Amino acid sequence: MTSDEELMLAVGQGDLAAFGEIVSRHQAAAWNAAYRFLSDAAEAEDIVQQAFLNLLEAADRYEASAKFTTYLYRIVTRLCIDRSRKKQPVYTDDLPARATPGSSPAEAAERGERDEAVRAALARLPDRQRMVVVLRYYEGLSGSEIAAAMGTSVKAIERLLARARMGLEQDLAGFFGK
Amino acid sequence: MRCEQVRQKLDAYAANELTAGVREKVENHLAACDACRQALARQRELAALLRGVPAPPVPEGFAARLMAAARERVSARERPVTAPASPWRWWTSVPASMRLAAAAVLVISLSLGALMGWDTARGGAAAPSASAQADPTAVYNLDFLADAPSGSLAEAYLTLASAPATEGR
Image (cartoon, each protein chain N blue to C red):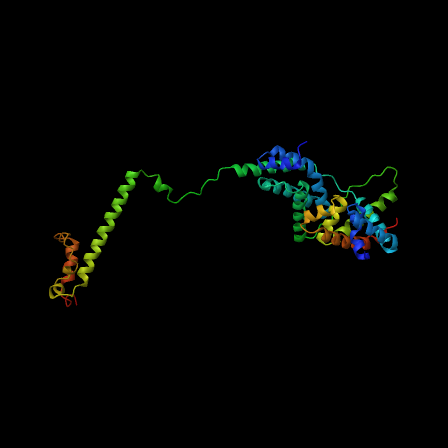
């Protein structure tokens, strides 16, 4: 299978089919990161489209010096934080209903309440803390990958995560131990 | 290691990203510190809480919309850029011989005008002589023009101009 880096080099030569393959492989990850950060489907789609188009524009200057996904997350992160600074995140109520077989209405309602509380707690975090939480807990990036995506050090990421965890634990205290 | 340092390492510890040496120090601290062990338990519970919240899938048709936008961008880049219309484009469309002729007419006209102006200036700068006072037409010294035709309006004006001031009162 052609690597992401090889595909990007082909995109730089004008290969749109290679670009389509890049989109196919990474649209879900980019979408998840943007959606988790912004909590708004329309904004997230706009950001992700912009991220891929930025990739396309810069493809002729792409150098495979870092993992492609780091490069992609760097673009998504920057766009998300810029967008968040321009406006308050819109907290939409369009969470998909979680249908767990055998769960009662009460359990479903409780789960819904918990999910809402988590999203609200995330939305209250400062931008950079929220982004490290998204990249760590939802995208599964390592400390060094997050540091590369956010243009900072691993130590700074550890501090951001520790502070974010403190804020989230405080906001979600009522759901611990359940 | 102090508690604050250990708490900052908990995420990396839980993800098994620490080097062997640092991992050992964290584990030694956790074995002796109840508060940090509880912090680790909360970190794991938090991770489960966060990951338990679903996200909607990628919107339907997203890839198709993106590829359409990408094709448009590439086409726009490849479209030839037309230079803005030059205001002198009409001049370059005229045949060279005609341009030369037009230039010659311009030069001759400007020269004639300059000559006329020079003669006028020369005639006006001279101290008014007794003959100039008596004959106002002499000031203009338009030698290359013919006299006013007999019976013409020009002759009448010239006659009027040369009449003494007392006439007409």
